Length: 479
Image (cartoon, rainbow, N blue to C red; front, side):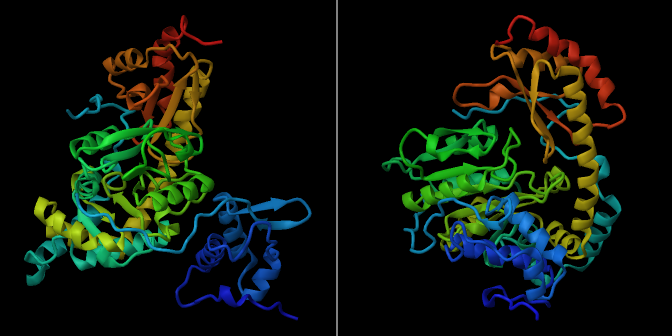
């Protein structure tokens, strides 16, 4: 006899991606407390039979839930709901009302420059066709001022893309098309911070964290509170200081460490934001590039209190020169954010928007991402392997499981990483000192970009400059 399918897990076969539907259905019920901690789930074979899908589809959904911390496997007892404290998902939050820069150190250009994709792999022909077609055929109403926050076609295409790939839940009206992530941070910081009011200027930021973002927040009048990050990302339980107005976080691939915010800490962060009436700025940095496992869904997708503004960019995916990014803001903030964007003149040229909408909807973006994930995975693996081979006795090296940069730390805490970076960059390598990213007590290390490395030559290049790294640590290693 065929097993009975759970009524709450009905699948819409016309919508496709059955694995994602199973994953989302279970995840949402876990977060709502309808699948309690310790609840044993049906075996993959039983559930596959009940739903009428391939067992591999259910296995993939279970594995994704396990990877994100929702499920755990116990020997001899199958899969159960993991133990964690979910924040309340009911109730309303009060809607906020609108409200000497420290610049990041410049880095030299070079093979290991971080923060840029490999522009040699840009899909020139496909992009040129989309751009030429749209430049010739823009509709009259697209040329006016009516869509200061983005033309509907691009807003819908962006939302469709991030809904499928990142689990984002929103309406097209919540999508604001902006020139850069920095522009999005500037817009939202100016809108939400309240300098002069009690704690209205407090912004919690990751430590280490994004220097340009710190500078923009300061320009908007923010008092920055550094919150320590470790292998599980930002730990809000370690925050010291007043409650935040803003919480800025890169949960999918923390910059610059590369860590992923664990499920327990995601829920804790959302709970803090809900309790304090804070807004979370989720910069989904480098989330498109994940090697060896499926990326964890966006924080915005599990937000039930409407406290997360989700930021994304095409600068790292395609090219910085496109000048296209986006912010997906909470429902209650749409009108004010759109007005602020128009006032600041943060517009993206219409023909670029229209061409990008076609590029996404024709499947060219997803095809490009699949191709580049393979290339970047190979470059990351080769870079990490070479660093371990030649510098592993003095550097601790991150796992390199995703993104376009690889963090390393000196085992000798007294090492002058800026001096080492300077010596390497004098030879044209383009690395960055990790200590510059800290607001609190710094930990010395080096940040390597991997997007432009060559797997065939990177070992030789690193072997050539390893002498600088080894020499600098001879007298400074900690026991």
